[in-house]
Image (cartoon, rainbow over all chains, first blue to last red; front, side, top):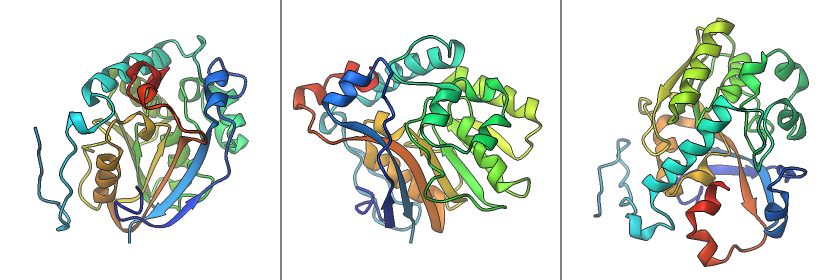
Length: 43
Length: 218
């Protein structure tokens, strides 16, 4: 979607276990939900 | 209803998606998000399904010195999902928009990176978050930080104003993500950076779950 909306030079960081130890952990684990950093540039 | 409007940068803008095109009703989702984050603003130490505050900032890789320098009220309602500064540090003098700024944590981190020659505008739709972030900015004496009421899909930002747009755990809570990215692109200067953190799932979520609005915020 970033490319579709005109962004370039897209980078994605390593996954972060955002929900580990929180009450939402089980649901997050079920769908392998992690946090990511994204970087993109408007040309 | 289908609406369209001419792009402010001359590009042909895609038509806005209608409610029936989207997985959930955008207005209903916004109300649910407001309810959830109102709680995070006024009662940040209760238990949520996500981490908050200083433990969360440490968990997702923020620089300790920058976080330690902030008062509790600037950090306690932080509920991000990653570090939008991990792939690119903001540069002194840059103009930054924080989409879904909440109680202002990322805006204050950004303010430290851009310095007094830069400017940071946080945008949020929740009154309690705006009240808290504005009071903290005043207490910190951050004259180069301001907070405006608005939506990610219609930012109260001049066309091409920003050198960088940051956001943290917000875009996944917007029903029309394409509209959000198009609006961020509008707010950026040519060559400007979008640096954000958000969640993504490694396994597919069942279609019925995607249309369950309660699961978007819980």
